[in-house]
Length: 282
Picture (tube, helix red, strand yellow):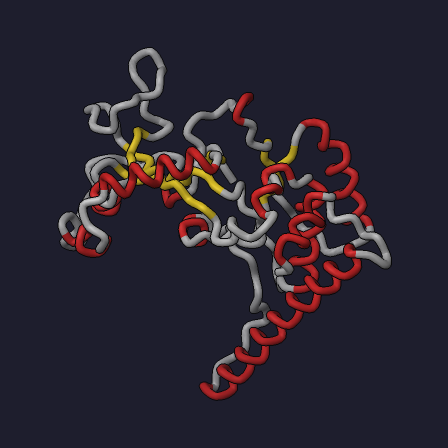
């Protein structure tokens, strides 16, 4: 929206200093969101009138988008991306045509989170007979990562209150219904988040609901093989070079056509990550 300066304001906790950058960025956000909502309403009004349709009473929302947005380098919905570079893991049934095409495209595949051996340990071989679902691992880099100064901001550490503050901007100036949101927080932020939620409900400041999720910490990660795993620039470049080395063709549709000839029943099952939504995430 405003380049690195906006990200730096996020990193400072989106402080609302009355006459400084906080006021500037907050007004800019409001104007952008309200202009987008105005365009949606005007376009819908014109379309419904032209076709004799009843106008919907709610037009703008924010879905819990993930895979499509993230694979294009965008953020999921209103949420900041997890990191400038990360591994995106997407769940498929074993031998799913898209997953097979992903392998030929160079992406790595590992067993899903529900596939374990007789001792309860996660399987490592995706072609193990006991494996029923696959995680396709895709190294991703956001489109703006090379902006001067962008790499110096750790967007994975934006505070829970900063996330809630921007969520409220989206809720109040864009969304007609409820804004889908997942707030990442640490244990020492729980009291502040609880107080924020209580205050916004009491003052009717637009808050409806939000999901809460423990912040990702590589050194204290409880759940393995999560949908997102932040990585360094060096790790991204290594993984990406390996993907390119394994790639059999640049035309993904061609690769997919080798396996997908129409409707079929997958060999494996999909568990808690059915529909590309991980059971331990959002």
